[in-house]
Image 1 (cartoon, rainbow, N blue to C red):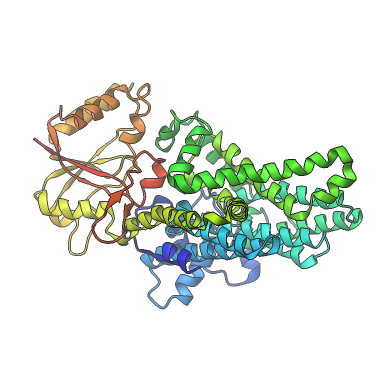
Image 2 (cartoon, rainbow, N blue to C red; image 1 turned 90 degrees about the horizontal axis):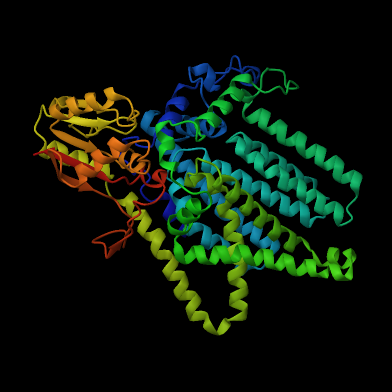
Length: 562
């Protein structure tokens, strides 16, 4: 827990109050616009409640409101500093880190319920050093609460299975947590078929059918009720028994689906045009999500869980009765966790939008599978204890390197300081559309003071549009300094030369020094080891999924006119 807290709370204000994460900016603005209702009746009425984003002029909102409501309460009434825009973001990050610590503790509890203490501790160790969860703990988004509540649902399900379907308290815990998970993000519904599978397993294990059926109906009622209570905006009316879904919410989900598909060539989608299903997310998971040394063990643990289940199925030759006896709760839960990981990875891996955080839901379960596998290795190869300890030290290198990002100034802040010091006042600076403009405002320094003129280059416009390059060529004549605050534009368009042939050629010529601009500065914030002091080595993760680097450690390029 201490190790996990160290990684998750290090450098909470990693962007120096610049709000450089677009999702954070949006959620912060929505949280700020929300107002507390005067009564429970008003809260439950989606047409009146000011905790409903649709009533605060935010007509497109596909997240759950529960994390925002929790943040608003803590940032307004618990944190002693002033309630302001910066405060909301920082409190949101702290809450994400706390939810992440909750996941670590839940993995320990799950491990203790199923296995021995060593496996429980191994699972918490693995999860505490997973880099993607560490990164998500530094963002005010709905993802950390979502994963916490789905993991809590799984914990409740484990207790329910161990009680052979008789624990009503475990049933309530499962329903409560899944309902709250839905109030964070509707993707929590993915867990429902796996919970259903657990009920089928209990029926197969000769649990009372009528009791199971009644418990399943109660569970569905609990899920819907807590979802209804935690996010009334999703529902159409104020009446508690009115379960119709809000049409605006349905339209939002349809819009999101359309925006995330290959038919939509909106700028955020360009990055995935040339990516391969399954291969692309697998590469990002192995190299950047957890790191290669740890990924090998986790993938082996996933295969091992299936192998253990397969061994049990061999009992079929002695009949179903023998199989039922051999297929105990521990084996079933491991199989269930493996199927969950497989489902999340394959389902998200074949989608057009394959950003790394969409796979976040599988990470806690991989920690359990990996711990189970490592424990088996430990028991079989005890004489090689030194190897296990050395392995533990090796896998710590990557997360320790990653937190170096949060212990130094953001690369855009570094670049802004350089601009103020090296670019004369009154200069004309470029800004690429769909990306953050530079320089950012710093204490006692801003663009207005230096009278910089900002020229926006619409690089994502279609290359077939003749006016695009006519306009850009005219703009380039007036620009003194080309600023690229991340690889969001050039990193995406150069991967799709069939759509952006002239844009691709422009960036190639720029980087090769063939244009009227020469590189003046470059700012990176790669994960480096050790995290403080002069680094011995760094991990160049510029080839990772754009959303893994562009928010907290983008590469900034600055070119001056020759």
